[in-house]
Length: 209
Image: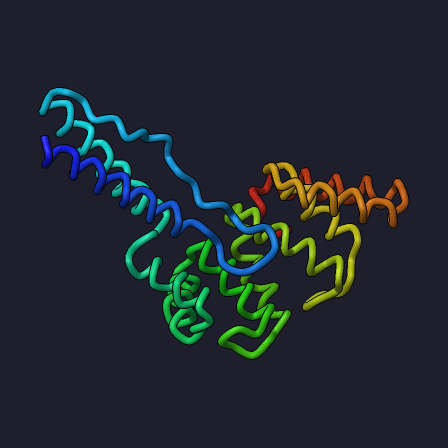
């Protein structure tokens, strides 16, 4: 009985750590760590306890493999949040170069803020764009910000509207509000252009937008 309970608690603990690992670094629209709805219910029979423990651990392993949330990922996030950007950069940069969207987004944040690297808005745009092309909503949101403020790119209300519209379609409420704000500075034909670009971008799966 005691072994089964420890197994379940271990599985839930791993799942919790995987959820925390999903939290994005920095400001802006930060993804919230998720918690799976697995209650602390311990079945009365030993086979059921073992089954529950196995399910918990299996889910944790699968989530870890899908998100890249390893002990290195946890170490990376901890390093960033305590301001140890050199360690965070060493963990993030190789993954970003290998095509990991979350790492590309985080690397964009570091260049945008000048954390562990020289502040460089153009390089931040590069990494945001690569992450956005893979469907990273936070990167899509931040591209809207960069176009709206003219950081690393010429200021362009149409593209700010386009990227915020795309991010809003994924449920980002702040993106929806920003899109509506920038629309007030635009003429109806320009809004139509932005909407058309957004539809085309989604159709192309965010590539070359």
